[in-house]
Length: 151
Image 1 (cartoon, rainbow, N blue to C red):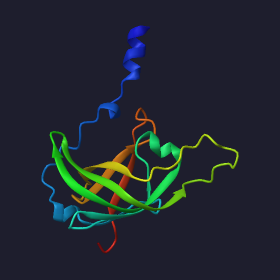
Image 2 (tube, rainbow, N blue to C red; image 1 turned 60 degrees about the vertical axis):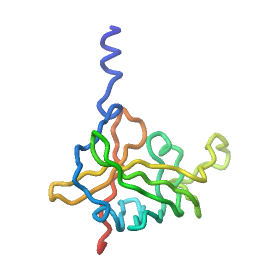
Image 3 (cartoon, rainbow, N blue to C red; image 1 turned 180 degrees about the vertical axis):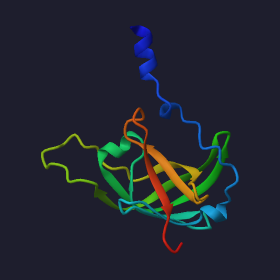
């Protein structure tokens, strides 16, 4: 019984090591990115970024806030693959994904600064996509950003 509990408690997303992509350039990553929820991120070639309605990563997603503002980004290369490190440095707006009840006082205050780590991957057409995991890591939900149309 203990062995079964130990085996079922492990999951591959909790120990995700990356996509194995190592050939992406900063120039390739620069530009506009979006997702189906209306999120928009612009990664400028000079290392600055604009964010609109970007949700929290991992368990922070469950808090329901969406941040907009200015920040910085960089493309890093780890053993498991490349990662875009995005940091919000100046928050300009906070929105909620869904309205929270007025009586709910347990919702934490949205952060004024925040950092995300987007894994760099390619789809079946060799187009770049960026993603991070959100919610419970045991489920493995991915928050996917694709190239903005015309970018």
